[in-house]
Length: 165
Image (cartoon, rainbow, N blue to C red; front, side, top):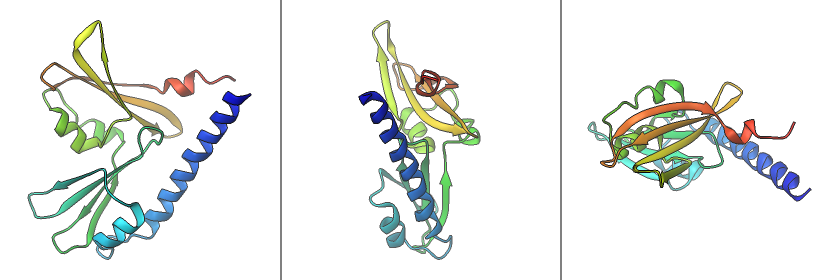
């Protein structure tokens, strides 16, 4: 009974977070919203990236429990120029062999989990939880000992597959 109550509470929290994000996004208009208004709606970014054109991109990941990650760009003029949800097939396609961990983090934001395995000590795997339509999925990236991408994969989210009917 306790497990079921915990699961229900977790689902409610995730749904509330997704709803809150939508409300926050609706408050921000490209070309109008300022860095201050983005920070007011989303808080402190998990990471900040300087762009070659003088703009700055803020990372807001909802991992590990959420299934979204946002990259919000503030132009050199101080106005929001883009707000993108990056856990999508098109963004995953940008992750290719040879990229390093920093480049992958820059594309997808922080992962939901990272793992090293005793039987494969020269590899590390990063996972992101995401939604493919209504289907809960996991996108995985495997890095070699030098921190370079060797492979990617998409699977069903095991937490969804293993739920009791």
